[in-house]
Image (cartoon, rainbow, N blue to C red; front, side, top):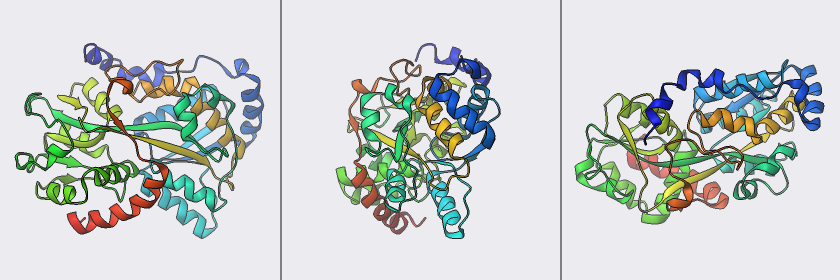
Amino acid sequence: MIGVGRRGLLAAAAIIGAAPRAGAAELPPHEQELHAAARREGEMTWYAGQLSAEPCEAVGKAFTARYPGVKVNVVRSTSQVAFQRLAQDMRAGIAQCDVLSSTDYSHSSFLKREGRLLQYRPKNAEGLLDFVRKAGDPDDHFHVFYIGVHLLARRTDKVSEADAPKSWRALTESRWRDQLAVGHPGYSGAIGAWAVLLRKLYGWDYFKAMEKNRPQIGRSSIDPVTTLNAGERTIGVAVPSASTLLSMARGNPLSLIYPEDGTVVVPSPSCIQKNAPHPNAAKLFMEFATGPEYFRVTREFYNESLRADVPPPPGSTPLDQVKVIMPTPEEIEKGVPEVKEQWRDTFGI
């Protein structure tokens, strides 16, 4: 982790320092055409359930700086809340959301089946890593420009590296009673996917054993990072690597743990609504989000780069050097509703 602290001193400048490299006049032709149409719309609304609030706002500012005259209205929440908001809009016959970004793959799959999505292929998506392009919809109704990397974290001043849990399985040991913090699958799509994978590995008895250790349960997968920062717990469960690395860069005594039984990687799609009130701005946003400038902005907040022309964030271990486990879209769509119910029965929340 050498150098992470120094970078953390620059974190406050990240939002400004990540300013785009090209002005509107220098945009490639396909972006120029969309920009002209998007300027007439003036804005777009992004229901954002993937990034935390700060990088979401940074993305919005960078987008407007690159495409003057087009504002991003960021509506940040957990993925399940974002989808519930969209579902309420649909029931009311209201068109507010242009782009939905969720950590729950089944949201985009469901909306596609319901005929709710606008088919669009961003030209900039050609520069994404191969496995990322394949994780999107083959019919171009949704695309992936974010993956969640979920693992463990520890308070370094409370738990030594030698004593830290080395696996998900270890969290059921009694020594971690009152030490764990975790999100909730009813609010976080990433936690839902993680729970599906852990149930597949160890059965639901795993969670019954974890419940005996009385974990502190938040909502978002990011909540345990805040809990660890406050010193209320010592082990963060299924935390995002990006939020943890950013917290470390800001001086918090945390360290990542890559579980021996697998680091959870969750491809997370984004989609344009068929009834989007600002369809051209939404298409332009998808071009931006699959292009290099988006990843230059988000890597400043330690999110993974999904393009070869933008380096990975500092302090992270390349995914090809760790054991990775990843749910299939089918497992997520079938399993997340099931684990939500099992979670409530087991944890009472």
